[in-house]
Image 1 (tube, helix red, strand yellow):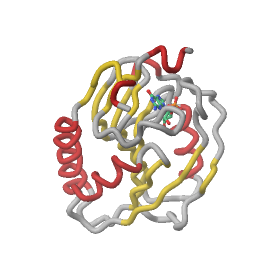
Image 2 (cartoon, helix red, strand yellow; image 1 turned 90 degrees about the horizontal axis):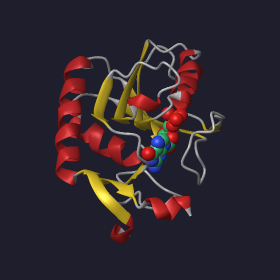
Image 3 (cartoon, protein in one colour; image 1 turned 90 degrees about the vertical axis):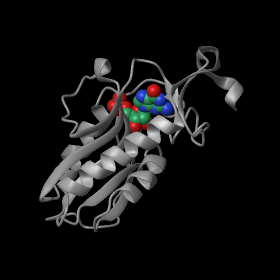
Image 4 (cartoon, helix red, strand yellow; image 1 turned 135 degrees about the vertical axis):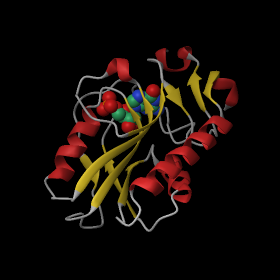
Length: 179
Ligand code: 5GP
């Protein structure tokens, strides 16, 4: 698996430190609000599980799955809900937890869909931000790292459903997906 990685972009230690920092900010900002953290499946699962353990407040969690790239590496812009929330979010403080925001199309669809359910507030926490590729204007309230326009895998992010279990964020050797 690791032989397929061209280079490491963000180390395991950097990820750990950033998650602790984000958790401390969320602990302060959401104290007493009992937020519901909504993880975007499947990419955000590892980030989500570390993030909630860094939050020292009462909170609930739920997951939503929306379609994204399939086995390609570029956003299609066509978004569908594949698995909806289990909980009612009306009147709740919602924090969407995303692995990566690229064009922002997936997230803008998600915000629109969840806003219609009348939560008390909606904010976004994204681990990775590829700002230069943004098409949709989505406000990121909490961001882990700005990254360049390279296709990354690891820490929940996949290529063709593989590499999610890498403990760091790495760039795949281009020949593996361009071929
Ligand atoms: P967007 O709609 O913002 O263009 O794309 C968001 C989704 O595309 C992410 O949740 C993720 O599933 C996928 N994605 C975007 N960039 C990358 C990347 O560099 N690596 C991987 N593995 N997935 C990506």
